[in-house]
Image 1 (cartoon, rainbow, N blue to C red):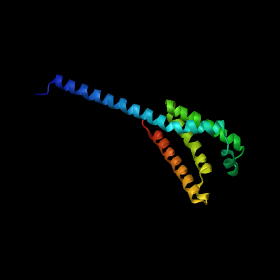
Image 2 (image 1 turned 120 degrees about the horizontal axis):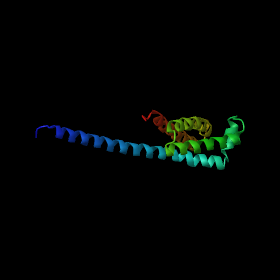
Image 3 (image 1 turned 120 degrees about the vertical axis):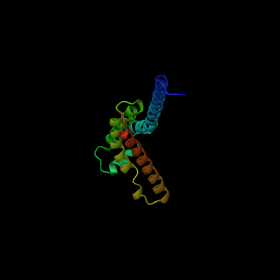
Image 4 (image 1 turned 90 degrees about the vertical axis):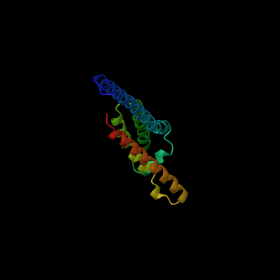
Length: 146
């Protein structure tokens, strides 16, 4: 079948259609991945905001001023940042805010290197590594092309 102008136009139209479908699928995957990543910040952030509990003691031991207020503020920050990420409102800013919140949370909340009990140490190390993975996911959001 010889290439005609009509065949060339049809092929071009099919190529554009495939590219548009691919773009839509990638957009859906990105939206879902942001929502999946945001969930833990919304849930755990709300928990810290609504019931600071034992977190206050950890923050106090780290000599952070106003430990109860710090826990509540950190929890609220996670809820707001997580919600913004989940709905796609300024996702890169949301990711940056969440990283800024998660670093001190990880260092204060999961200092596994201080634990003497092997089981407690392993549990805290797992939580620490989970938080590092979350930071990795947030860095991936920062590196996304718009």
